[in-house]
Image (cartoon, rainbow, N blue to C red; front, side, top):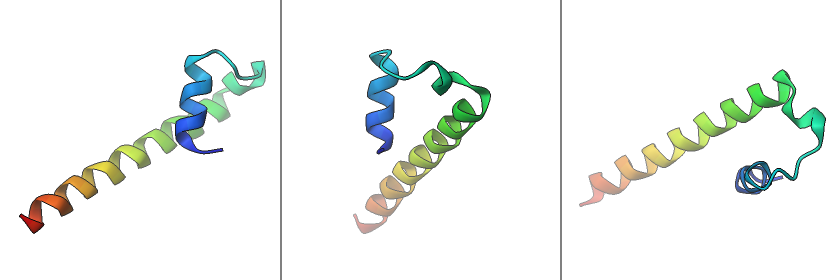
Length: 50
């Protein structure tokens, strides 16, 4: 499942009950951090080309 899909399903409250376990939430937080870092690097890379 892509990160955008799980974010949308979380917002829609469309996940099974066990999706809110600590392990799953920890994975989500790490995934969210990685996505945010990737976006940051893309922005930095884009600014260097200017």
